[in-house]
Image (cartoon, rainbow, N blue to C red; front, top):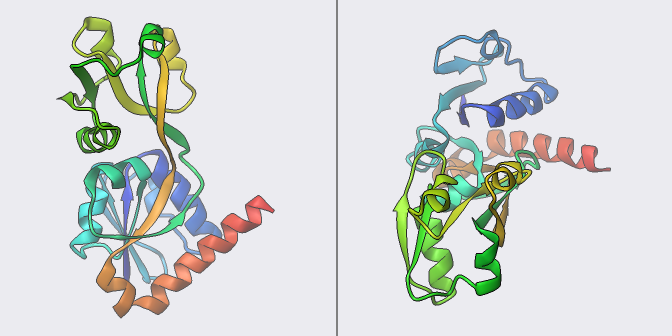
Length: 212
């Protein structure tokens, strides 16, 4: 039995759609049950529903053979995993955002405060530019950082940019594109290669078919 860790929410729904297109019945999960562990009707796959930021941990430690998570989560966690497939959904951008005047004056001032849910990514990004920043870790709406004066800018994911615009903020720099990725436990890929490869190849064919 292959175990897949799915991030609760919209990524899970999209992943279930793909699995069902592979002929894997996920009817029990679709019932809206509050259970956290499910087994597909044919008994070949176990699915565990976890918090998005926990997916990499479940896969790294081998509790799950496969995981589906956003690229932003994988970058932030920095776990030892094999990233095997870009699933092409959940698309957005990881950006530095703030008030428009920051773009014109530059954000390379001597002391920059950055509010974010992604302290590791933020530290790495600014360090790569040779800039030292003060990182303020927030768990809620990071847009409040610049609005209240808590921070100069924010690092966050952006889809349409509507929330930024409605709060007078805009994208200042783009860090990287983000989408859902399939990751695999390093040991599982060796010991259960055939089963895992069958799932990955099936998903890849589905995705290529949608692009053609």
